[in-house]
Length: 279
Image (cartoon, rainbow, N blue to C red; front, side):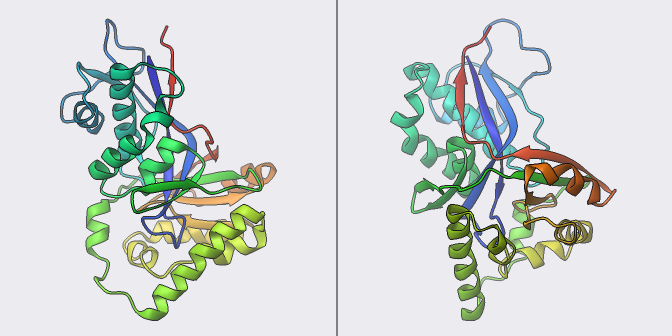
């Protein structure tokens, strides 16, 4: 049994802690039964996948194989936590494809408790773009299938530290600004209105605070928009920057990003967490 889980980009600009996007970059995990697969590692009991696995009732040790960079805003911890939870449920209840649907709310609740917020884990669990609130996650219908170009610098950021820099209060003007942009973003995605995306991904709650200590990320975000991206945002707490464009333009956009980071051309992952048979 192999559990395969997509990375994620959270917030998408204005949707702080409420919107998440699954990406075509995947972590894999499984219960050790004999040799560990090539390129995988036997993770200890303190690894977030192991903690999630045991909290979900799993028994045994896990291996994890993940190309998702750690501390870069691409949902590494959320993806491996979902992998551990799904592996535990598959171990307990079987690996029938209907497993996720039958236990989805239970798995989302535990993953959210471990992660601290639902946007990353909901995207990794369900795939696509999801809106989350009040313990629920609903996929946003998409009228197009774009490329998502991510620019990943060499430095890392701490989600907890970046959150502590944010103010405890929000002005009415800024609250209305973000509510409006979030609603516009969901509507634009569903309608396929790509011209609305640049405005719809603007934010006044968290990005400027986080970008103040990550100037290369600010430059990358501006470079993506200058190069013709439909929209660009700080992925999660950063420092990765994500941008959306037609797939045919993705290589050109990637080449226009600053040289002090590396780029990946990805797609939106629509499958979410899946269970695959082992060798």
